[in-house]
Length: 72
Image 1 (cartoon, one colour):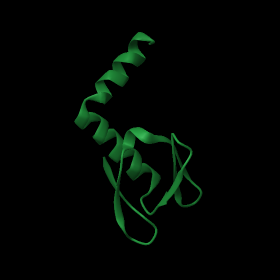
Image 2 (cartoon, rainbow, N blue to C red):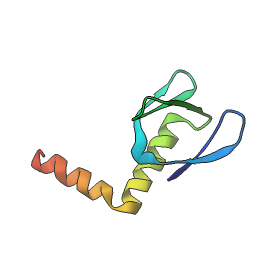
Image 3 (cartoon, helix red, strand yellow):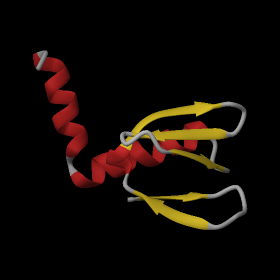
């Protein structure tokens, strides 16, 4: 899970694996795999860094990198 901040300042945790897309429109808009959209205060690059750190923490980053190397 990653911690983000809603536009009203309330923090919340989001399962980063559910994220499909992130855009700055200019607010950071996160689209989940179920189609739901969330708008957060966090900058797009901050969200990407949090996702990457989370993936490394749970060990999925190595699997993603390895799959990319083998073309799977």
